[in-house]
Image (cartoon, rainbow, N blue to C red):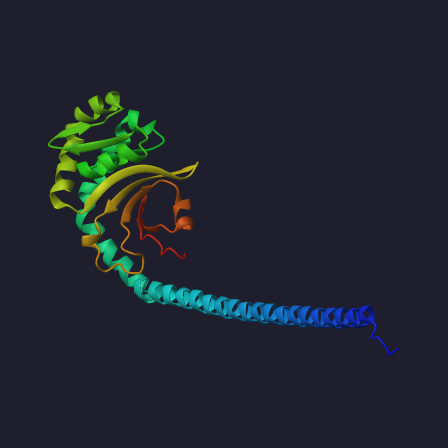
Length: 246
């Protein structure tokens, strides 16, 4: 009788071989997939790193650009130039001091105003209404055409409208156009001032403060000098608004 192949054994060997091949294929596939994913992660991290570096570089460039723009628009003023500005500003004060001093004297004579922590007299109606629509104190007064107006302080309006001397000096101030508004304000609880804001078109010689209005100031406390007010005579000071960086 001839040898008969063991079919079952042969079949088992074939299946085992196939299983080994499948396992090898799976392992190879997984390894390749991990390698691909690792490469993708490395690429993504590399790109992210480059993007972060580019973003940092861009932001730094923007910071430098803004700094350069500020330096261009905010002119640096030397001590000598500042002194020249004060000289010019004092000359302007001397030209208009009669009206300014008479106005301050008359305002100080009004007991009702003396009691107010803050008040402002404006000559421009648009400016007045901007304050009324934004953050009014109730002590803002609009003056024009020989008349004081206020939305919330009728008592003071009656007294001010009866003061012909005050109206006369304010009429002269309005006609000359140098002063834009007058305000009583406090530097500290113990130091108050009457501030006469000057229209910037009359102070082209003052540079370095972004065109902010400067002031002629009445102050009875010499402590004003500590806070940047330049004394020109008893109770009268000049205020050149400092640069934003100061």
